[in-house]
Length: 170
Length: 366
Image (cartoon, rainbow over all chains, first blue to last red; front, side):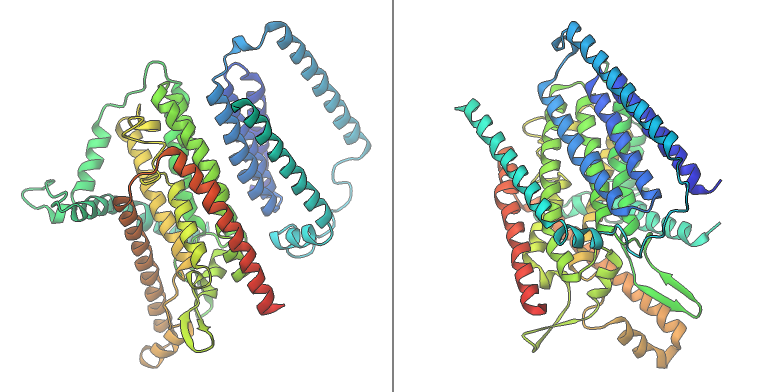
C-alpha cells in the first residue's frame, strides 16, 4: 500500500465517523457542528489526495471555515435546547431522514453495480487541470452567464434578508 | 527517508516559533514601556544578571507550566481541552508555504528555501486561517461562562467578516503578479520598477498596491484579534472573553498562538508586499556576480543565501515592530465600529481596488 492509499483510508474513515457523529450528536448542537467541520476537512484532505488543490482549498475555506462558523454563530446566539423540538415532530423527522438515507444508499448501490469503479484506465488530464487559472478562465468565458446569474441570485437573497430583518426591527 | 524536508521543518520551527515568539513577548513589554515612558520588564534575574529583561520569557514559561490547570465544573471537558490546540496548530503550520529565501544552485543540488512550494500557497494560508477561528469560538462556548460565550460569539462574527475582506484585499496583488505561489511572488519582486520610466523603485507589492497593503494589514491584524481589534477579549467589557476560564499552559497556548500569528502576519506581509527575501536594487544575479570574482561561485551563492535570509528576517522584524506600534498607539474599537469598518469601509474599498487594478492592467497590457 502506498502512503496515498493509507492516507485515503484514514481520511475516509474520519469523514464517515465524523458524519455519523454529526447526526448522532443531535442533543449537543455545537458538538454536532464541530463534527461537521471534521467531515469537511477530511473531504478536503481527500480532494488533496486526488490532486484537486483548488477544490480542496475552497472546501476547507468555504465549507470548513466560513459556513460552519456561521452555523456555530447562530447556534450559540439562539442557544437552543432540545426542549424546543417537540418529540412527536422529532420522530417524524427521524423517520423521514432514515427513508431518505436508505433511498440514497440504494441508488448508490445500483449505480455501483451497473458501472464498476475505475473499469478503464482514467484519462490523463492536461497540465494545470483544475488549477485556479483554468477554473478562472472557464468560469469567465464558457460559464460567464451562469456566474452572473448566480451572483444576481445571491444579491436578491441578500436584499431579501435585509428587508425581512428590517421589518422585524421597525 | 528524505532528510531535506525534516531539516527545513526543524529550522522554521526553531527560528520562527521557538526562537522569535518568546522574544516578541519581551519586545512587546519593552516597546510598550518605552512608548509609555516606563522602564519596562527588568526584574527577572539570575544571580543579579538580567540581560535587559530577556529572562522574562523564561520566567513566563516556568510560571505557566507550574500553575494549576483548572477546567470549570460545568464546562464541556473535551472541547475545553481541545480548543487551545485548534488555535495554536494552524498558526504554526502556516509557515509551511512562506519562503525565507530564494532558489540556489550548488553544483548539481538545488536548494529552495521554502517548506512546501505549492502553486496555491496563499489559498493554503487562507484555508488554514479559517480553521484557526474555531479555537476561539469553541473556547468561548466550552467554558460555560456567559462572558466567554460573548467572546466566542464576537470572535465568530469578527473572523467571518474579516476573512472575506482579507481575501479581497490581496486580489489586486494576484492580478499584478499573476500567481498565488508565494515563492513566485517573492521572485517577481526581486527586480526594479521604473516609475514613469525614470524613477527606479524596488518592484515590491507595496509599490504596485499601496492601498492593498494598508487594507491587508488592517484585515489580518483584525483576524489576529489583538488591540485595537480585541473585541473577543475586551478586557474592559467582557473581562477576558474567550480565554477567561483558561489557566496555566493552556492559557499560554492561546497567548502563544496570538504571538505566533504576529510572526505569520509579519512574514506574509513581508513576502507579499515588501519583496520577501529580495534585497532592494540588488537582484540575486547582481549579488552573486559581484561576489564571485572574490570567492568563487559556490561561496558566493552561499553568501547570497545568507544575505537573502537576513533581509527577510529584517523585514519580518520590521513588520512585527509596526504591529506593536499600532497595538500600543491606537485606541480600542467598539464592537459595532469593528464591524462597520469591515463591511462599510474595507470591503467596498477593496472591491474598488480590484476594479481599478483591473482597469490599469487592461490599459497597460491589453
